[in-house]
Length: 169
Image 1 (spheres, rainbow, N blue to C red):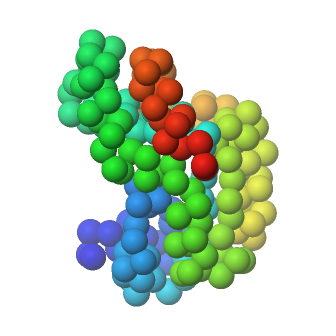
Image 2 (image 1 turned 45 degrees about the horizontal axis):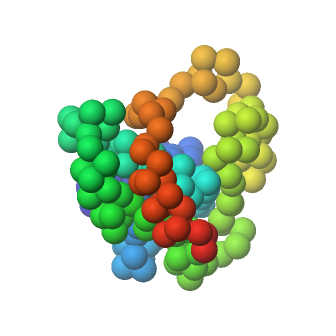
């Protein structure tokens, strides 16, 4: 808890944490976060589900030092079938969990594709929602990406399986 709280120990300012893994938090995780801080506002960024899962596969490989471009289809299938890969794209479950723990005025839902198409506009939307002064960031800061993965297309059979699995989303 001390490690996590240290990220947010900035009196009078907003502190933020970003990871798609928050989509995997169960009720107990949200309850715990709420015990650690007095107030929370949640910006939940959704991405086209198959691309979200593909990105998670690429990131999983990157974190483990394996090269997705040289892996066999079956090795990639093994990763794609890990429960957490699809879980991050199951927005219906995440939205339900968030709704149980946060008031509507403390939730903002956005789409990754819209953000990437209009980064400055999205930043304005978030600032307005937070009730803070708009930020006029230079282009290099707006374009900066942390932990990017290579935009390598996964094999067609893997993409097709992800589409079947995620089609309800």
